[in-house]
Length: 201
Image (cartoon, rainbow, N blue to C red; front, side):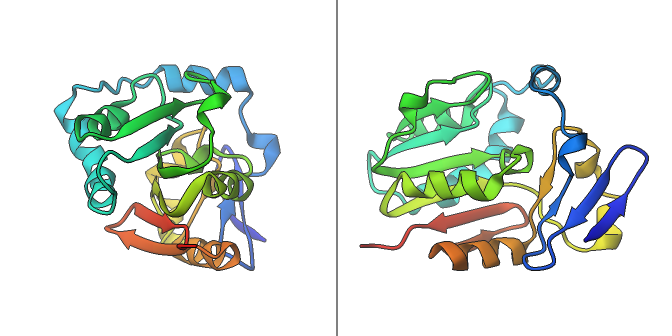
């Protein structure tokens, strides 16, 4: 159903789960999308960027076994989060469709998967998250960082929708609905961190 419109795009909302999304005709081409990402200037040694990522890294690491094995999905050109996790003794493979497109990294039996500021870029987020969840061992964690939709009024003035690569917007309701369908447990940490756990066997 219609949710919002601005001078650039229209936004629709799923009546069942509350997911807000941009219709495909407004999606960027792969080349234009890559050009937007190339403008980012995140550096693995930037203290401010590390503080930002620690909002996910710290609660996730508190739940991991020693020397856990994981994947940084959508790591980008400067995988700072992977570096932080490796410094803590964990093993981290990298996957990004533009910057680290080695699909061999998408292997099963992982203790954790991280996706920071990624799910809002996915054209089929439900399918992608389902696929990632199947790569986790029982008890494993999928750690996400994304800003959440609060209500229609705040959505209209939200800076997050100004990014042309942001095409899907989750709310807490969306995640709660999706995890019920998939049999996962959700934990919400602060305003933008979501930890999803695959149940123990």
